[in-house]
Length: 117
Image (tube, rainbow, N blue to C red):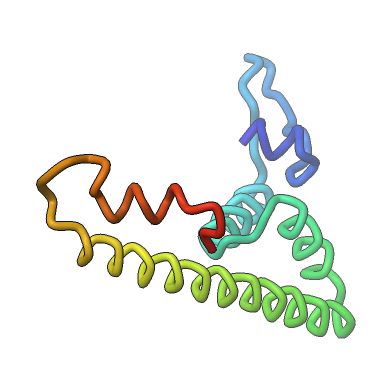
């Protein structure tokens, strides 16, 4: 929680006479918002923007949707890249017998190529 306070996402809480922090119901809601947004892959900066947009009536809805669409595009690009990596690894693993001399290993050979792409 203090990390989010330092990042400017949560307000500094009131303190009781005992020194304990006293978090408001609104702060607890904001913390849930932050955690759920993080689970969806939003960065702290993006979460800050979403939090600002979430308090704007009509204008905020467009911005929130645009942010979610932009995040989805990033996720889809990452998935495409991960699928490419997965396919490459599968091919290398299939080509490797798993025994023999190391200098004959197709995985090492593929990784050592100058024009590896």
